[in-house]
Length: 348
Image (cartoon, rainbow, N blue to C red; front, side, top):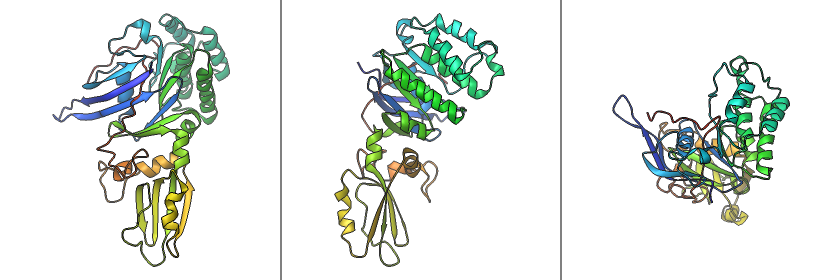
């Protein structure tokens, strides 16, 4: 069974000005058991809305979503308690202490692990008797992650889990997520984050979202192995007409220098350029963060809503294709609920 899956999910929010806002548009996702899938994209790409659709906290206009094989809009408690969710903002009441929150949560989850909750509280130095509203934002964030892990979920969905945490706390959270994956019962994790350095260390697969859909996805190691910044320096004052870097997703010319972000599956792809007289070809590896910036930063001369990044030239799966017309169809999955089988939000 695929623990997290979505097919052609779409969601438009009503607007007081009569024109709907399209948040999710043809969202496809498939997350394999025991893997960590990172969902990245610029603000407004539709990540949080997609997670809420998967969790059944919002109802999709069209398409379908499945967690543990179930539609979470209709799923009962026996299924929902197998999924944990950490939202982008803390949901627990300010007056609750961590001890109160754990006692409350234990009523909803048959697999609640109080010894794990206590161990994490000591490890992260979270006081159990102080109201959460009096703790720092980072400590409250740790309390939310603690609660989700103590559920011993089969599926864990995290929306910016390390937001507000210092580097040491972030490393602690990452270590606990790895422990959850290595546990005997296993865990499948879907997370949305802007901390791409952390994601690079944790995730097995990454999907890049833009305009409400996954535009490109693949194993992290594959992205790192094949994606390169290529710089081609020509003699003379300008780049000759008709010259292109094979596998380029995005290119830019400045004087005699052609710079491209390209997917290179074979080093021989650049042999044609290297054979040109007096031409220098340089390759540079890209981190996940560098790749994200290269693909999604605005293109000079285009408006904010006009296809930057991959739409300009393709996706890592289809170099040179029109990503907007050919979205990735490697479908995937996701989970729901964080502290208790969460109530649905109003569909507005």
